[in-house]
Image: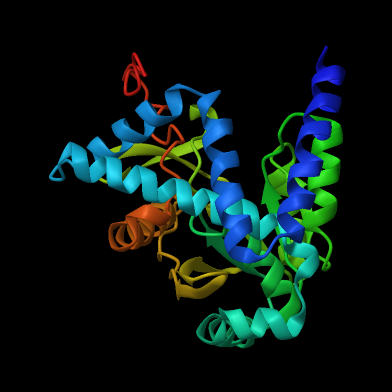
Length: 307
C-alpha cells in the first residue's frame, strides 16, 4: 500500500513541479499558491495549528491580525515551492543578481580563518524560500551538506533530493544524522541544519521560545563540542519576486564545561535569534508546524488538543 501511495504521489507531484518550472514567475506564484491551498485542504488541522501557534507567539495581536499573518504565510509557502521548482533555471549570475549573500559569506570565511578552516554550522529555519537559499549558496560560494526530513516515500524522496543536489549539495537524513554532521564538519564543510522543528523528548533539550518551553535538537551542541565548528544563524528574507537577502549572525558558543548545559545554552541563544527574526517578519515563518507539541517531563502534551 505504501509503495502505491509513493507512486501516486510521484505521479501527482512531478507534473506540477515541472509546470511551475516553465511558467513566468508571477504566473508560477499564482499557481503555486493554488497548489498550497489545495494541499492544505487535505490537512484540515493546519490552520488551527497555525492559529494556536500565533496565540502563543503573539497573544497581543487580534484574531484578525493572526488571520492576515496566516494568509501571508501561505504566500511564503508558495514562494518556497516555486523556488524549489525553479532550481534547474538557476545560474551563478542569476543567483548573484537576485540574492544578497555578501555579509553572510564574509562572516563564514572569517570564522573559518579564525578556527583553522574548521567546518561551519548554518543553523537555519523554515523561513522564506529556504529551499532556494542553499541552492543559490552552492552557486555563488560552495555546496553544503544539508540535514533534511524526508517524506517517508522513497521514490518521491529520491526524485526530490535529485533536484536538491543539482549544484553539488548533498542531503542526509535524521536517522544517523548526528554522525553525518560530525563527519562533514571534520571535513571542513558547511553543514545546514533546520533547527526549528519539533523533536521527541529523548533527543531534545528544552529552551524558551516565545515564552513557552520548546523541544530543541541536541545534535548541534554535541557536534560543536566534538568538532570545534562555529555556528551561524542564517535565513533568507524575501525582498521581492524571487529576490532575497540572507541575514545572518554568529551565535557565540557559551563558555560552559558541562556539555548538556552548553547544548541547552547554545539552543537558547539560537531560538532567541530566531524569535527576534520572526517578530520582524512573522509572515515568513512556517506556522502550520506543531512546534510546541513535545513537552518537558511531567507536562502533558495538550498544547494542540482539539486542533
